[in-house]
Image (cartoon, rainbow, N blue to C red; front, side, top):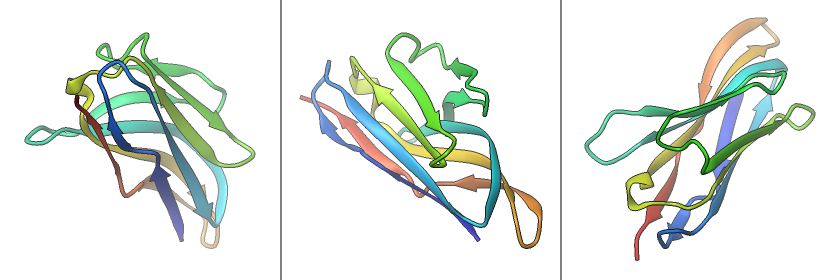
Length: 121
């Protein structure tokens, strides 16, 4: 069994910052690409940022220059530093990872439970 637990959401004023964290646990052999998605009320889930095992990153145009994704392969964690937050960043944020699990060996697409970010004055 493999699970992701994400945390760090909350209420922040426009222009403020938050840092989201996500930790993977379970029978993990290795983790491939890790990512953050978000889903705003009444909208579809969208990709925010991705990071490969080697550290290559990619961002949605709407967050480029404001958000930074990072990971610690030794700790099986991924983080999202969010700066200069805007009201339109309000959403539930989900971490996601491609995991090669053990016992039995299999590839899993795993999601965190989500953490709510609200940007409002």
